[in-house]
Length: 536
Image (cartoon, rainbow, N blue to C red):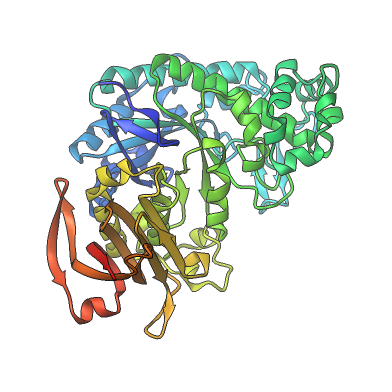
């Protein structure tokens, strides 16, 4: 069979694994979890408990190439074999030149040779700086403009992909590859080393200007507001003359994306798996407060030009404006691929909404092994607990999350077939209102506030299986079903069953009737098979 790939179905990009659509019901492990095979045993067990089908795990450049040109893939092999034992897929994360905008995972021989592998200089001539505006961070990272670093990173990634191809070309345990991790530069809007200064003063590449002319009408508002007029996009102008007040950030973005492209392209040549990048979001801050050059939504057109080997752009969402962020990252045909999000009480309902509304490819809370446990101080900062929203301060219930995952996995084939169509829809209380989901012949009124219900942690996923038959996952919500046909305006139930899927078949656990369907208000997580009819 072909290696995992992306396919356009009904205008929606879908991940195909073993010639079938696959939705990544995933979790990303903590950064160091994959550094030890013995330690990973408990990670796989936790993934089993939570009914995950995929685990996102780092591969560390410093581990696979401890000496230049000498590779050790034993850890990679062991992790892949463990995944197969637990019947899990893997999305690998390449921790190469960047991890959270720093060079933590570069090998010793790279870190110590500052002449060959240049550092990003926030001030010309200085390889290190304490960032007072980023929690006093002691900061140093590799330069996006260093050809030697780019070549070394790309060579290591190519060897890694070649090896994965050799041991996994038929099993397809590894289904996606993330290239680097939260790329960019902290502390300044761009690098100020000698090489970067010279390139910033030079003309903007002609091919880039030609691309901007072609997509001028599609530029994001932020870019469109600062860029010169379309007719002025001519070769012979420098970055400042073309991009105005955003010149520093666009410049850093272009060359960061070009660096990542070189790495991704080298890897794809050896094994053409879907390639992703993830993004540390800008949160409306000034460049440098967040990593400048990363694939933030406003600069995604630049990444698409400079890094064509990247297939998917994913936001790491730890901010309260979750839905707004999802909207930004589903524009231009980009599938929603969330490699990192918080493990607070919104985790479960957001997963239902990501799959049911956005038809997401991947949903993956970070540090999934801690789901259900009290938050640490670090997690409190990361998850934005300086808020009045108690749900953001409360850990996701593990049992509830496992049930949601189990139900979604059971429905995988039905859900995936409905991707890109109106047959699959969802509602979430986070929108702050009751919602109506409209199907062929019926409207579903989903409500979170009524005489009998007041909730801020509800969601509902509705799959129209046939014109009068629906599979519905409810969590803390109520629903009403109404006919949309004037000639038969009244609606009644033929049957309502609660159950689960096994081997593609719905198994009824309980036939609901009487009081249980009079109000149709549900607490907790339930999968319902609902059959209705209309009459006059």
